[in-house]
Length: 400
Image (cartoon, rainbow, N blue to C red):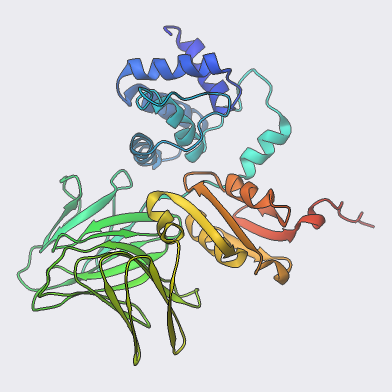
């Protein structure tokens, strides 16, 4: 595909979902032949500069999303395109262009081909998914906005670098004493950290992990507010302890998830491998793989559960298994950085089952809930109102 104008037109059709299967195949093959992200990145940057010349932070967002697109392919690329089992991983780079373009708000509205007004209105109202974003707060109070093109950081004493080994472009002063840093993700953000002992932590949206610059003595302790998945290095003599506002979770070598958000009624620990002991006040429970503890007030209980629902976020999925809508909407609110209002409190306890990619636009997630026939949604900027299904079909009363 040598004609740049032809390529651009085909690319625009792809973004609107109007390509025939043979056209999608041709576009995918072109980007595979290009070999790298350079041409795709240049195209995105030119279009973005044309539509929003004053934006200063778009290149960082482009780089972040290109990297995420390379690492993770959306579950559904194009409904009419059969994807062979082998040999298409690299070809899907062009499909990632859809994710990247929508995620940075590029809509080719100047295309000569007419766009369905209703589809255009939906696109303008849609809300984009979260991405890698976090702030590192050092012991001296200084804050570092971490690179969204990176997946996480590695901490080893006073040396802190990105997890690919590149330096953090900010002054981090070396010290021999133990200091405490905090890694914080905002609503709509996620990030990873490798702690000084090699333990890996995945931090979900709206969460904070406080950790020491190095572990000493016979205990490895961190503090968590929000949600995180831990893959703990086994050190029999040095237990790893996660402290939340209401609980203490003690482990040796284990993989587990902790959800301890301030706006959730319960603190929930889910064990994937190994063994953990959860303490809440005077109560203590021990978990084996496939069990979950739930602490509320003075009570602490455990049960067998489907761990997939608890750790789906870490794998890039929303996974709901008989989950109340109120809980689901809190998760959606954190990831998409939105506000949620229930027009009818009776909808809060309706339960849903489903799985969808967290890279989906919010409209796709809401559509999954809509098809049950139980609820509908109104989107107004970054506010989503949950309404009964029958109300969405009623016309508003005429103004006098």
